[in-house]
Structures are given as C-alpha cells and as structure tokens.
Image (cartoon, rainbow over all chains, first blue to last red; front, side):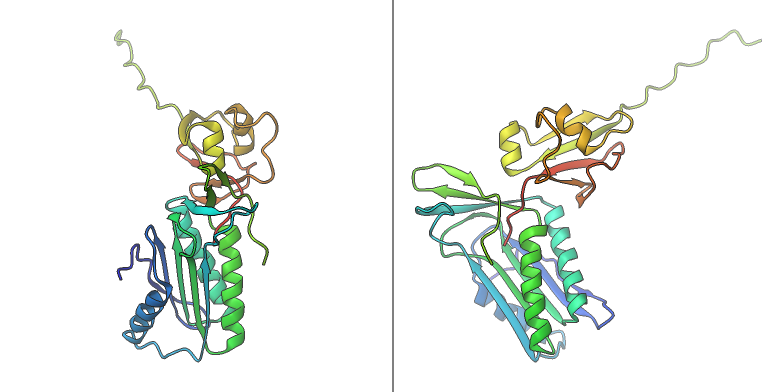
Length: 167
Length: 92
C-alpha cells in the first residue's frame, strides 16, 4: 500500500519529539494495513514501541442522516488549508497530552458505506494520555478541519451535512 | 528650464482579493472562486452582502479563512489575500 500525500514529520515538543504523520486518501484505504506500515516505519526509526496505543477507525454508515439508504458519502476539502490545519491540530493535541506518536489518515472524495473514512492512532507511555489525545484529536478534526460531507441517496438526490453525528 | 512633460505614471495594479467558496455555499452561489476589487477597510463581513452571498449579515455558522487560516470576519483584508467562506464543517 502506498502513502498518498506524505506529511510525515518529527515535531519537537517540550515533552520530547512526536512522530507525526498525516495523509489524505482519495482512494479507499485499509486501516489495518496503514497501522502495520506505520509500526514498521516507527521501528525503522528506532522509535521505542509505545506502552499504550489508542486507535480510532471511523467507517461510513449505510444509512443517511435523515433515514433511508446511503449510496455514498462525498468528502470535499480545502486543499492546502485542510492539510495545514490537520497538522496544526495534531501537533497541538500531541503536545498537550505529551504523547510520542500520532497517525491521522483521512479520506477525501467519494466514500462508500463500510469504507474507512478516518483513522487516528496515538502512541504514548500511558493509556490516559493516549486515549484522551485520540478522542480530543478526533473531535478537533471533526469540527476544526475544513471537510464537508455530502450524502448521496438511492434516488440520485444529495444533501450537504451541516453537523456531526452524536458522540 | 525643461519643457518636456514628465513621463506618465505607471498604472498601479488594482488591489484585489480572491474569494473562494466551498460545498453548499459554492453550489448556492454558482461559483467557486472570484477575484474582486478591494476597497479600503473591506472585511469578510462587509464583502458577504456585497458579493450577493446573502441579504443580511454574515451568518454565524459561516466561518472565514484568510490565506488558509481561520480569521475574524471583521479583520481588514489586504491586497492579494485569499478569502474563503466556509460552511459548517463536518470532518471525521
């Protein structure tokens, strides 16, 4: 599997360097393969395995927000700003929680029900920071990174989503 | 005394900003980017009705980015800025 838009960096933070990688995928990606590749990549950099890891995988539901079948979800983004904002949100969140690694994979374009739309993987020394950082970063990218979702319905109609699903 | 008339001043380029729209806002307006003249003191809030994007004030649900960074809609714009109106975000 190839990494589509490499945004890998090691960010110097007061609590130690954070291995950070952010990618936008215009085609379907397999989260478990991404994780495997990410772990290999960290090992190759002498990154000691994290004692605690927190993962989140989000997939597209088969139901539309207002009920009925969902044919596809279309994800629009703001090229340039989205990548920059993701990097800013991730760096900020990692520094606040003192974690050591952060992987964010996000889809753009047309996403089918069941396909992964987002993957967040946080490595830290303790479960608390790992879990809190993972949840906080996920919420931040849902509300603070310029993405827009449009639902496509079976009858050919579509509707822009104006909010996020309940926590 | 030099009777020659001074050379004409080079015409300065008109100050402009590039306005970008996304998602539902783009579809409602029917355009995604437009270069518009910038008058002194112009802000994203003032340009919103001037561009015909809405009859009233900039809705609170619409966020503004200037040069791809979230910005205060009341902040004065500078020539060459890229101004984006962002409908409600739904990532993740």
